[in-house]
Image 1 (cartoon, one colour):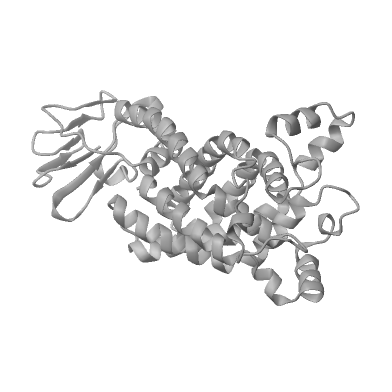
Image 2 (cartoon, rainbow, N blue to C red):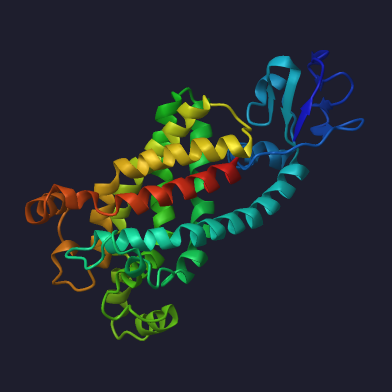
Length: 352
């Protein structure tokens, strides 16, 4: 909840009084808010950080003074005060859940044709070319259903872990770049644990791999009816470590670039968030294109005889350069950057 007060008139051992608008009594262990507090918007980042790091404070309903309430109560220049209450945080959390699912679904649908084009161009000995767009984008929505179902919970887990970890690290005195890097590393394993199976099926459907060139329902039913459940489950996590090794530098570059462009400011307008998000995501995706080529080929390798399924990241990069040339590591750059601009703009505009 955001509100603006002329100044903080006084503070006492019993709590903080902001010109008679807010009174918090520590001895009673409760927060009493008097008069009419002007309601504003609590960002998802502030809500997740507050809910995770200050769970003990919320559960005990204890009241801290202004100096102790970093996630919930911050004083800015010109007397702006940021205050979060338990009730408003709960309401924002529920609305954020549905909003996040809607935004994630919209982003997936909008960028999916470019994602399909990227995967097809990155496959070894691909028959597709950027000069033949009709052929390249034919059936471009094949395999879209599973990402729609998995991206929303995966994204929720990622941002919950990342924002809570980053806030805790910043409170512990870590520099912002280090806090961001460590927080992203903590968030990626559970994120890909949820998303990897759908990403494998999606990639194989987009590339037209034998056995996956049919509807997603038939593919899932075929996997479910497999006689070797262990082998099928293991196959769905093909490329798990490759996805993490690709996503880590991509996400770190993206969030660090975004923080740099935004100057670390909070509560940006959606248009600013879209602009900075599009630029930072495009830069990150461009720089990590070779890693994306390796991880997509690893996920597309269905049979154990496929070389791409067993090579390490470094060996895969070396083999691609040796057999296909350096340019192959940058396959699909054009649709990949276009996809990054769209997804980055939508993600950060909605996030802010």
